[in-house]
Image (tube, rainbow, N blue to C red; front, side, top):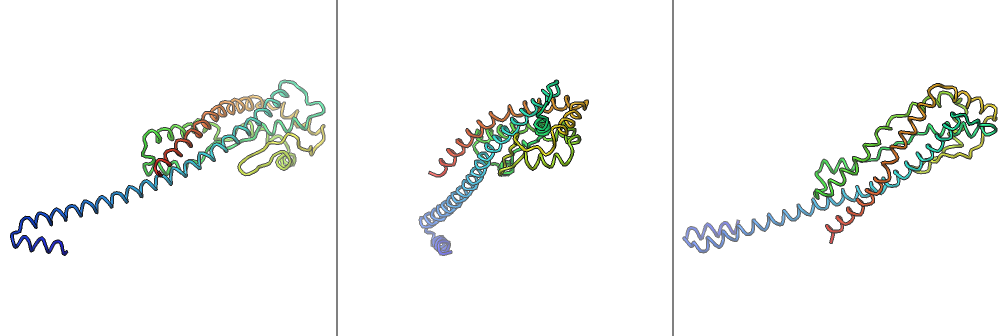
Amino acid sequence: MLLTGRIVAAFKRQDWLTVLVELVLVIVGILIALRVDQFADDRRVDAQEINFLKLVRSDLERDIDDLENIRSAYGAVLEYGREALATLDGQPCADACWHTVVAFFQASQWVDTQLNDTTYQEILRTGFPRDPALKERLTRYYAQGEQRRLIAALPEYRELVRSIIPLNTQNHLWKECWEVSGRRQHLLADCEAVISNGESREIVEQLVAHPDIRSTLTFWLSTITVTTQTIPPQIREAEKLIESISEHVESRNP
């Protein structure tokens, strides 16, 4: 108000030089204030982007652990599935029929292959990251997970096997032949038998006799094989992205 009053007074005196100087001071003051506001806004946006990228980096680190767990778990499922196929091809279980029951059951295990992309979806909504190359790499990374949606549903083989093996036996298999640690699953081959070898043989005979067991198991193992092939390249891409995000964050925080 004081500056405006001086301008009015100078105008009345027709002191044009003073008017000009005062107007320049007003304009410069406005421009400085706008620049300060813009700087503060830029800093706020930068901080918001960095926070989001740090969250994405944490997600990627967890993804690597989850992907390793998926690959390990399905690797075990494949091994059990091959044992079951060998039995279906005529290899008798002899005195180890309990182990064969375990193999058929463990081959039906299913692991959720979907990764948590909540943070990624949120930063897309906000427009981050502003670096086009980094955004494109994140998009490609999360697109790789879409390839695994083909086993999002439970396999038919799982339903068939678990419809044949008696419930009490399954309860024992869950208790003694499977364990979970954090987000990791472990399929245990060396678990104590709850039924005799003769009873185990009867279950194996029922499994072998079912007309759809072989086809559904073959399809399930094929699906797992294709799916797990997508995991190593996604792990490598996650590691590279973590490095790129860290460099990006550090460059914004000199």
